[in-house]
Length: 268
Image (cartoon, rainbow, N blue to C red):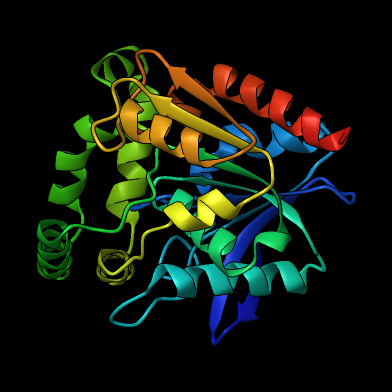
């Protein structure tokens, strides 16, 4: 693990591999950089410099304030890339991480060599969703993460994944239980205020890989198809029997799609 101070906070991150081609992996909520373990070393072996940070308020990174917007997360990551002297990178994000990737696309599309959007969607939050996120933030501060993690697990993983891969279910549960409540609450408040990213996706000219599980209770196949229609150079992969964490539930299939995608970028 490495650490760097950017934008008034200290971020922890893993770095593997070397070279000019960079891959930035952005975790979701309420997780940390360890959710990308099946991809970090593997992508480095393909010849990519892989960067997997803990977002501010998560994992081993410093805590956040009362509200952390997706723009704040995105600007932290841009500063991290600057620190590492990485001008352009393929950016992969899952769930909230995918929306942070879209925020990077909105702010500085020229910094994105390619885009990987897994289990995510571009729409702004609904009025009801805002109320729920703010209420959940208060609950986490009052009660901690344990009960919340227990409730989320069957929505994060497909039922067959929980049954067939208990070690993955336990690791997902561990990440959620150990997430700092204050950081998770700040992110929930910030995510409630997110903009609509559909115009940013329409303008993006780079290659994109969209991944969705057909048993994802947060991101529907129709929403993934909607992103696919917006993006000019995209491929859509629907993974059968998979919930909200395709990179963990089916790492071999996910990595194969990632390898094909990165291979096309490498020879472009």
